[in-house]
Image 1 (cartoon, one colour):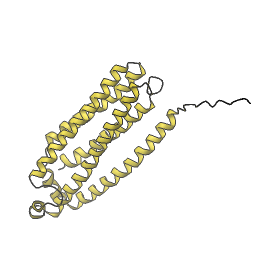
Image 2: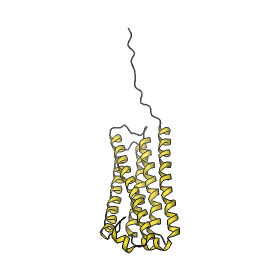
Image 3: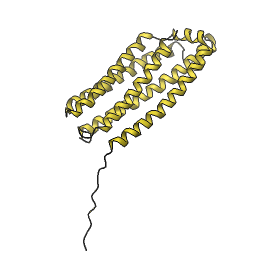
Image 4: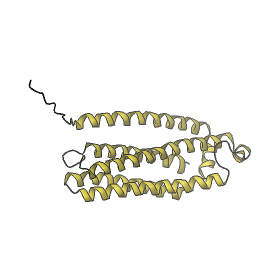
Length: 206
């Protein structure tokens, strides 16, 4: 009796992978888009309170974090070019720099949030209930929810990129098969784009 050999084929469809990532990005845009609409409504109803509350934020740290994310977008974009040229070492270095920049962003955010907490500025604090108006409380509620959700996406992005780095090391991602790297770049650009909106809304409000 002849034995049939089953050969397992590794199916690779970069276009389907990209479509899946774009669909995911679309759902994320809906999430943050809804939050931006809520922010806009409350800002329209409480313009003076939002202006006063924004003065409590550190514009310098916000600007530094903006520069950090813009540079990280550049490095992850450069990593795709590097892998296409089969320069795997440079690809790994560029991705490592992206992760380091993301970590620096989170450290800055940690100290920024820490300063707010030390002054009693956080949702539900007695200081806020006694010293701030309802509009200012709404501002900080949105600030912590939206920047916190963004920080969570930063952490997810870091894990995603580190995972891609591991796959590159194992050559499961290479110059002929780099859709996973491209998808991590798309996700990271989404994270950066969201911050580009968050920064002026909260830090530069007038």
